[in-house]
Length: 75
Image 1 (cartoon, rainbow, N blue to C red):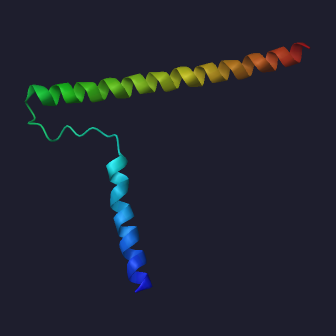
Image 2 (cartoon, helix red, strand yellow):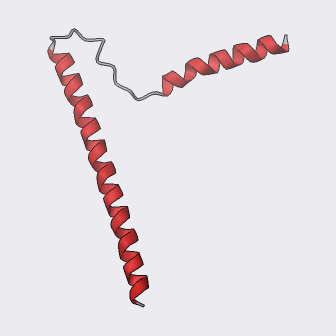
């Protein structure tokens, strides 16, 4: 009985992880509809913006590390 309860609990928790996903699914629209095109465009725009933000953050962190090393070496 204990194994059955544990199995059912794990099985239910496994399905709940998909409910927290923020992924946009454009497959619910017809392929040649305006809604599908706008969904894909928004998806592409969001990925591009997040990629740009990550690149800028990485660049800033790298520059801060280099500047802090040079300041320490000057003293």
